[in-house]
Image 1: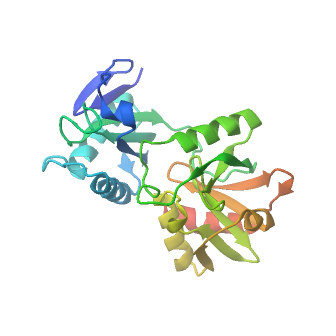
Image 2: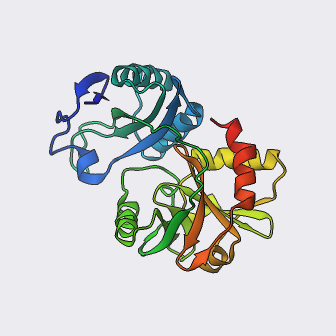
Length: 279
């Protein structure tokens, strides 16, 4: 049984620590980060904490001086060791406001929960069997100051994930309010057409993925042609290749969307050239 950390204290799995008046429960008033740990080291932790701190600024948290990335890193290390997940782990850090109504929060300080789960052997390796994906259309993602954050108002992704499960897809692609390609339930999306790599610009409402940012930096370094732009559904279905990226599995190629099948020649080259520099 895994343990978890709530506000600096370790609890056993199954213990209730949030009450009915909690704003995180009532309103989704918070943020989260999912970070990979390998051999006791957090991967790209600086980028994850930078995104979290930016999100807390946007959501107008009051951040105590003692609440720092160093403090959270220390507590993550203790928890992961206790759970026996140091070799390879998925760490989830959830930050949320405490009790109160919409206009009368008790305070604006961050509460937090840290959890960890062991990652399976072979995590992050090339997926020889490509993903099956589909486009989710019922709920569109907005393009605003919240769009790039990993915040707890996750309903568009939840409903898209339910659709993916029903349709037996590995993942679902979300559209923004303009009907253009945004991201997926758990990843950012990249297309390849005629040797050029495209990904939705952050202004299109996608999450500002840590792996997305790293992949873009490495692609430029390796002199791949890359453009951040508006991407339509026609662009998606006319692509030669598609791959998804996130911080846990790195990069996975897409085999088909509906009846359209995709190759993986350049995606594999990107994986071999770029992912070895990431971990």
